[in-house]
Amino acid sequence: QVQLVESGGGLVQPGGSLRLSCAASGSIFSISTMGWYRQAPGKQRELVAHITSGGTTNYADSVKGRFTISRDNAKNTVYLQMNSLKPEDTANYYCNLETTLLAREYKYWGQGTQVTVSS
View 1 (spheres, rainbow, N blue to C red):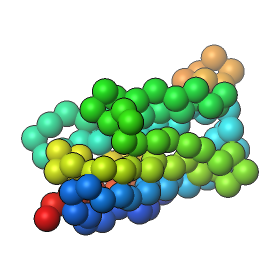
View 2 (view 1 turned 90 degrees about the horizontal axis):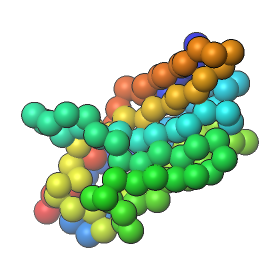
View 3 (view 1 turned 90 degrees about the vertical axis):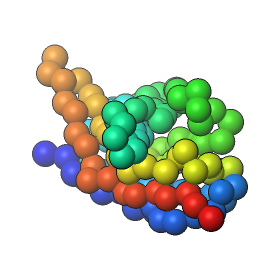
């Protein structure tokens, strides 16, 4: 069983920065694709960014050039550096781990961390 624990959310003014962290338990972190998703009130959960085990990254168009996803396999941790934050970035941010092991797919979610961008 994998547990994902997010941290780093909070209240920030427009134009500010935050760094989210997600620490994973277990031994499959290094072979997994890690992602950050967000869900605003009344909206569906959407992909923000993900990073593969090989380090390939992908971003939603709305965050390209402002957010950076990275991972530290030695610490079983994935990060999301968020710069130039906008009010529309306000949402609950969730960490996600996905991997395939012995032909079986695994997917885990963290509990979420709230990011509020407001003056």
